[in-house]
Image (cartoon, rainbow, N blue to C red; front, side, top):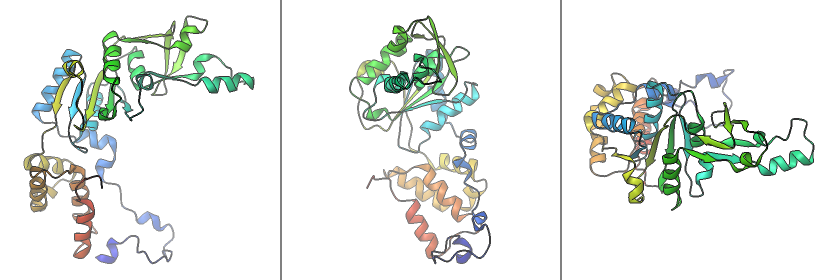
Amino acid sequence: MAAAWHIFTGTGDPAREADAWRALPDAPPWRDRATAVERFVIGPELLDAVNTALYLRRPLLLTGAPGSGKSTLVARIAAELQLGEPLEWHITSRSTITDGLYQYDALGRLHATQAQAATGTEVERFVTLGPLGTALAARDRPRAVLIDEIDKIDFDLPSDLLTVLEQGEFDIPALVRAAGAAHRVRGADRAMYDVTGGVVHRTHWPVIVFTSNGERTFPAPFLRRCVRFEMPTATETFIRDVVAGHLPGVEDTHREEIYRFAQRLVEGDNLALDQLLNFLHLVSGEPAPDGDARERVGRILLEELNGK
């Protein structure tokens, strides 16, 4: 069993078989985004929070530990309501509202002008809508936008976001200054969008989901305008449902591992459900690590996410 488990032996000797890489197994089902979205488990409280946000046209602010399914929820909403692929804006400490709305490559246009580029130097060629800008520019249907890890945002960004979402429009100065009333610019989804007079106007209220790891507080006006929901600590029953969705039958044969994982969550260990899924996928597969190898794999995969 041990020899079969070790696809990579560490000897440095090339495998005797041609195309030895074909021995690599299929990826776990939850590594495929479509499968992960399809099998995502939604509890009744989260279901009500999503519908509350949809009815009120308010952003949904999800708080919870990494790996609790916050990001997957956006794709589930988009798939069920046929909103197209969700747009994603991953926040960093340097993010500004402009990053989410549009980017203008002024330097690229200058170089193209100096080189007398054959492809043209029209200003719209150098403007790209950001994820939020694309959602506001969409005409055919609402779009879902994941604004991820807003704990990292600059102090002023929450109020800037609220202003844009409430007003439903924003200017692109480079297009405002350009001659002509209409421009076609590329969106974050690589589709083309019409912008008239350099101003993007909202046709549909986008479905906005903010995610937070609970690492900072936000201004009261921002919180008041969001539907807030804190992802609960997963119970043993919930974990079993998740495991059953991805690894049918395993929830019964590995009850002890599921119980111990649930207890660690209750005790405050910082863990993500996909850690357990990864472990159960390996130890229930064929071939599977056994003996000392199984213990080592458990230590590797089930270590607390302490950031060290």
